[in-house]
Length: 258
Image (cartoon, rainbow, N blue to C red):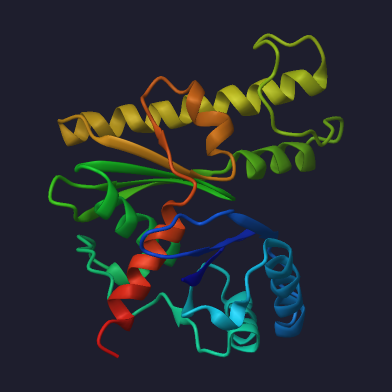
């Protein structure tokens, strides 16, 4: 069993996982760019104590990250609590993923991990939706090669921009409103963010499917996927463990034969 960690701009998603067992539970911490390695180690150790796992007994750890300043602190934290150097997803790491881009090194580690898991778990072609600070919608073609995608602001990012730029609009939570046509400001904002996100995802999926020329399997992950995707017109599989399973597979590829 290993510790798989995905460091995003807003949250750090992690869990203990192995080839035959799902991550249980999938856990999250806020991403803190000012935290030290000892601070992260203490937080992880406290959580391990709660879920009754001894980190010293883990086989290792693997990290994907889009926040470089946190990557190093988390690398040191994993060393402190597990006693082994973690694998960092990046250039030179074996992934088994064919990336059909002019600049394959520009592909973010979290997208690589999700694509590796999708290629292993789902039929091709496959569209992957990751709902975080940004919402990414990316594509594996019929041969399982990564061919590109689209990036748009996440629901939380859009809401923060709306509240921050409009003086009279408050900060509100993201939820499905009781009705689409709301009669107060808070409800109207929640309706706009919720149904705007649903509609934007459906719009991108429709365009992608038209270009692909065949029906893909569609899978979604990320903090808001469970809230939003059931209301999309397209059939979308929810897979909370997609990134962690991809990280597990990447770890196996790079540790085999060492």
